[in-house]
Structure formats: C-alpha cells, structure tokens
Amino acid sequence: MIRFRQIEAFRHLMSSGTTVGAAKRMHITQPAISRLINDLEDDLGFKLFHRVKGRLEPTTAGVRFHRAVEENFLGLERLRKAAETIREDEHEGLSIACMPVLATTLLPLILKEFFKLQPNVPVKVDSIGNSELLVQLQDMKVDVGISAEFASIAGIEVESIYETDPLCALPPGHRLIEKDKIYPEDLADETIIGWLPGNALSHGDEDKTYFGRAGVRPKCLIRTYTSHIRYAMVASGFGVSIVEPFASSVWRAHGVVVKPYQTDVKHRYVLAYPSAGSRSGVLQDFRTATLIVAEQLAGKQWTD
Image (tube, rainbow, N blue to C red):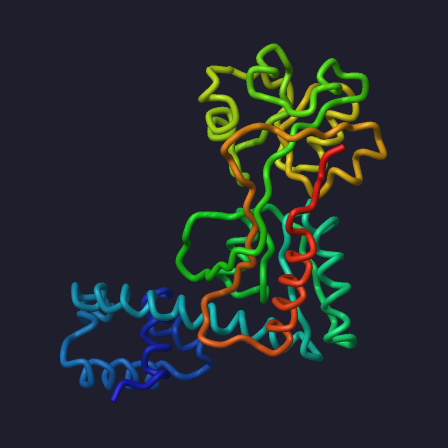
C-alpha cells in the first residue's frame, strides 16, 4: 500500500535531485530516504530511478508518475489553504466578494435584512472586479459573491437574483435631458464613457451590444472598469454613459441625470457560490436576505 511518506520522499527527491537534499528537506537520514523510495518502487511495481555511478536519474515511468503526483498535490494544496483560511476565523462568519458598485449600493440593503436574521455574525466584504471575484470563488476563499451575470465556469454555482434595463447617464445641462427615453441614434455624435476589457461588458462587446444594431459607432474618450468612475466622469462633463441603475441615486445628487435607454439588453445579477453539496445556515440566511431585497427592488423606477 502506498503511503504518504513515500510520496513525500519521492517529490523531494525529484525536486532536489539528490538523497542528501531530500533528506535535509524531510529532516531524516539518507538511508531513510532510500528505504522510502525502494518501498515505493516495490508497491508501484516499476522503477522510479536509475542508479548511475552513484547518482539517481528518473526513469520515464518515474517522470510520468511525478506528473500524476504533482496534479494530486495541487488539490491537496488547495485543501491546505482552505483549512488555513477556516482556522484563521475565530467565529463562524460570512465572507463576501462583491463588485464595487454593488458593495456600496445593493449590499448594504442586503446586510440590513441579514442582520435581522443573524445579528451577531461577523461579515467580511471584499470589493473586487468580476475576474478576481471568480478566482476567489474557485479557490474557496469566500463563501459567496455578488456580481453581474457571467458565463458558466467550473467550480462555481450561480443563482439569478435580479435583472433590470440599462440606463443612459447624462451630465448636467445636456441637450438630451428633456427626452423621456434615449435611443442609440440619439448618441451618434456623443462622446461615450465606456467599459474596459474584462468587465461584465467589455470593450467591443459593449459597443456592439448597445450601439451595433443601430449602426452607431460610439466615440469613447474614457474607458474604465468601475461604474462609479463612469458616473463620476459623466458628472464632470466628459461624456455620457450606458450605466447600471444601482448607483444612480448616489450620482443624481451630483447633477447626473439618468434616462431609460432603449435596447434589448438586460443587466442581470447573480449570487455565486463555490460548488459544493451543502451550505451553512448562515449562508442560507444571507441568500434569504438577498431575495427579500431583490423582491423589494422588482419594478423599481430608477430614472428621473
């Protein structure tokens, strides 16, 4: 039967190249390393190393076995890191990854409902972009993510929570303020504040989605990852932007005017979880709080 200690000796011997180096790393003697490797070869039924003039050279089978070992150790390393994260939490808590604009608008509403159910549970919030959020979920560093909808990704489960129409944000005194709705054709001569690649709508995708069908080719002066920056640039008069609705109430106080934008596109938002068979009671209560807020927002009028 293969033992973990044998595999550990094999990995160290492959990486160090000598029994001396492997013995130092494992804090045992050279003969002990040799015995572990000999026993492993007996258990496997094939040679891992050639003994050439006092040196050990890996066989072809040894190299192939090493690849398999490393693949499995990557999984063990992820488990070790997950255990460290859990161990560092003194109490049962909730770790949330959230897009910046949702962290400052939607999440506070959710937490108000959540603390009615779990008043003493500590919460950690990491405000990050969608790409990093997905990595955090895959690495099991957070319990849940709140983000714009994304394509299916291994290791992550999603649950749709809310959808809404996009808005057009206009700077104070803009010529289109008097219109009830904004159409792509209205923005043909406008400077647009656009997305950068890697966001929910990336450069190129956004241009095609929002303007392509109308034959409008937007002129972008500034592109950015975050919604709040888009609103800020509009407030400063650098152009107009197609935006999500959550931050609209914040930026109306700075003179930004938001109007319905006529397009088939929907902005959809999800709860995202590391794939697992079960979820804690704390996480279930957070989901409940999220759905309560989503129901409250259903049908909400975001425009001026």
